[in-house]
Length: 50
Image (tube, rainbow, N blue to C red):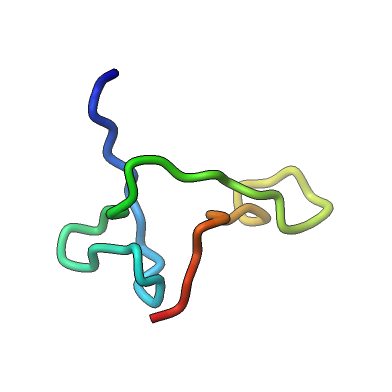
């Protein structure tokens, strides 16, 4: 399996590496948080505040 980089700018998440703007997790699950099927209505299911 190839190494994947997950870009992230959710700087209040404990999994976000703020310096490199990437997620520290090897994989994430993305959830639909609204009724719209838009990018803005999704977020990572592993989100945890710092």
